[in-house]
Structure formats: structure tokens, C-alpha cells
View (spheres, rainbow, N blue to C red):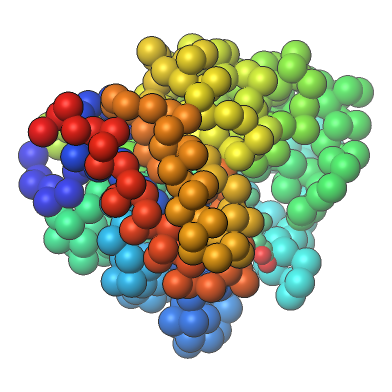
Length: 357
Ligand code: CP3
């Protein structure tokens, strides 16, 4: 087993005692950091940055040089899988991700290949290996993927969407076509995440950014079912350590019990749910990650600290809390506010772990 200097993030996910509450931020490497923008310019564009092992490693480490974060997250994107399936990912300035060849029919779905993670996605595994090497056991490395449902929304809509009309039309009128797509994605994601674990990812997070736009019944059938399948297929112990799995459905507060029943180790919470309620409902089954509103980072540091205290008190004493934002950090947040947030979590959480000393 390789040694880790700071393993409080992994310990908290497994609901083991820690000295202070661990903290990291979704999208912690990104445009709010001037050094990120510089490295991205050096790479040319975002996709080239993801595909450049050395620079992807560099931007992963940038937030860790500034802040005492308790975990690193692989610098990549959830849309690498659809790109490897041949859809042709590109980014239109100001419009987010787009695909040259979106999915239009059952025939398109039948033709989709299951990508080999060490071949078409080999650049991601190279980044994982390089980052693990560069971290030198300082903090754990998080690997990730999108959920099948969330990936399918981009593949069928052709990019970002507000109303999800194309994929919902498919869901309600050709459900068997959508199920075939989700099944292929679940297989691809399982292979991809297991390859990340073998390359050195020490924990896994599945981002279901758009599960919350579904009805409860459709969430079960079209999103959760496939995440459950992935959880069942993941390597859960590697190199002598448990590899914790976190599921995050934005807008998924209604379904925490069902999510916890998949056998995952932790649930990511967005800011619309009270962490106190979440702990009462599922805290005996899973750890909880979250859940400050990312827009709180626009407020002065004193207000940020107050919110950190409120969330710490909401979770209460005991094990099983990883502090995070309820979604990704916004690109125009002052980096000093992120620093104040991280310091506040470590400083103010001590009393909540005192019985562990
Ligand atoms: O958290 C991290 O620091 C790791 C890197 C990471 C990125 N994307 C980098 C990125 C992670 C974990 C993701 C996941 C991701 N990508 C999700 C799920 C999480 C979420 O935010 O809900 C989704 C839905 C995507 C798809 C995607 N990629 C979108 C919607 C965008 C934003 C487009 C835009 O112009 O803002 C991206 C691009 C992207 N992914 C950026 C980064 C740093 C910005 C690209 C840039 O440098 O301009």
C-alpha cells in the first residue's frame, strides 16, 4: 500500500475519525485562477489542455499550491467518453461544449463503440499516472466520470441544454433506444473508471449534473439504475486500500435514500438540501459531501465563515463529512475568498472532532 501523508478525505468518506473536516472544491482547477488561464493559453484550448499530460498535471496541482486542500481531482472533463465514441467534442466560446455528430436515432446508438480506456482514452490514464507521481503521496487523487444520463443529455441535445426537449422526446417516445444508449454508456463508464483506479485514482466521483430534471420515477429508471450498475462493477479495493465511491445528483435531494441504497460510500449534496436533514435520512449508511452554495464565495470572508459554521453545525459532531461546494466554483470568484473558505473549514471544524483526539 502506498503511503499517504494526508488521508483525511478518504477517512471521512469511509466515516472514520479525522482531526478536522476535509475540504476540496468541485472545479477547483479552472478559470477563477489566473495561472490556469495562462496554462490553458499555453496549451491552445481546453481540449488540448486535457490531452497534454504535463499541462493537465500542472493545472491539477495549481489549486493545491495555493490552498491546503485535502484532495486533488484529475483535470479532465466528463465529455471525454462521448468524444472517444466519435461524436467530435468542441467548445464554442461562451456556449460551452458542442458535438459535431450528435445522436439522432436508434441506428446512431447501435453504431456507437465502447471505447478502450487505455487506447482512445489513454491520455486520461496518462494524466492520472503523472498526477499520482507528482503528488508524491501528499493528498489522495479523485478520478471521475459523468453519469450515463448526464452524458446522454449532451450526446442527444448536441451540447448544453435548458429544457432537454430532444432527450425527453426520446425518453417518452423511444425508451428502448435511450436504454440501449444508457447501457452502452454504463459499460463504457465502468471500464473507464476501473482503468482510472488501476492508473492511480484513489477515490471515484460520478457527476449526475442533470438527474434532477427528471420525475422521481424516471430518475430511478433512466439515471439511478445505470449509476447502480456502475457501482456494482467498480473495483472497490486497490493497492491495499478501499476506493470510496461518491454519487452526486444535482437536484437529487428528494432521492437520497434510493441513492444511498446503491451501495456507494458517499453522496454529494447540492446547496438546496439541508445537510442536517440529509444526515438524519442517510447518515447511518453513507458519508456526505457538501454543501455550501458556490455563490456564497462572492460574499465577504466574514459571511463565508459564518456559512461554514452553519453547515458544520448542521452536520454536527462525528464522522462522515467532507466539506465542499454544492456545485462547481464560479469563474469570477476572487481566489482569496476560496482561500478564506478552505481555512475556515479546517479552523472551525476542530471542535466537531475533539472526541477523536
Ligand atoms: O473539478 C475539477 O477541477 C476537475 C475538472 C473538471 C472539469 N469538468 C474541467 C472543466 C470536472 C470534474 C468537470 C466535470 C464536468 N464537465 C461536468 C460535471 C460537473 C458539473 O459541473 O456539473 C460537466 C456537466 C461538464 C461539461 C462541461 N465541461 C461544461 C458544462 C463546461 C463549461 C463550459 C464553459 O465554457 O464554461 C465544461 C468545460 C470545462 N470543464 C472547463 C473546465 C475547467 C472550462 C473550460 C475552459 O477552460 O474554458
